[in-house]
Image 1 (cartoon, one colour):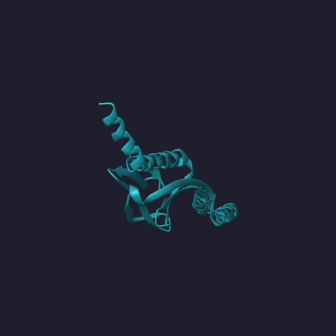
Image 2 (image 1 turned 90 degrees about the vertical axis):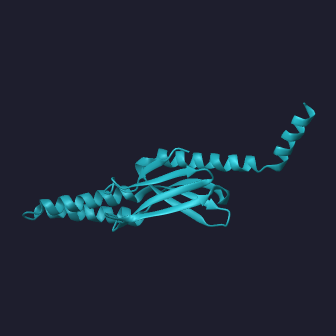
Image 3 (image 1 turned 60 degrees about the vertical axis):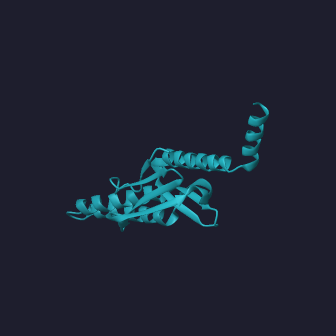
Amino acid sequence: MKPIKYVTSLLTFYLKGEISAEQNLIKFKNPNTILGLIPLGSMKENIPINQIASTQSNFKLKLTKFILGIIFAIFSFSLLGVEGGFIGFSIMLIIAVNFVLNAFEIVLQINMTSGETRTIEFFIFDKAKAQRAENQINAMIAERLDDTNNRKQTDKIVYAINNK
């Protein structure tokens, strides 16, 4: 599996999350931020492939973020009438656009054999990367299941013995 790097937010485009695989492990690295702007380390997690039951991706709209973005946009336009309000308008509009764009997201859910669910949130423009990660993880799950299928492995041995 090739490493997949993805953007987690519009304003922190320079911070990237990463999904990679090493032998029988899936590695996740996701940047942590304060208020979604200030970088503060990263969360790293390694999950053995035999602990993953399935994956799925969903498109979600976070209504709270969307409404906050609209409110910030309306408030930013009200600052245009104030003398010297252009700087405030610009800052508020950038925050509003960030809220609105971050309200739309792609969520990759990883269902564990224990019943837990891990979620990885992708920025809306990285939908193809979320799909690629889902497909690659599903391929690794299928390969593991193929390797541990006793009937199939026994059939291969019997076939090899019979066709000596």
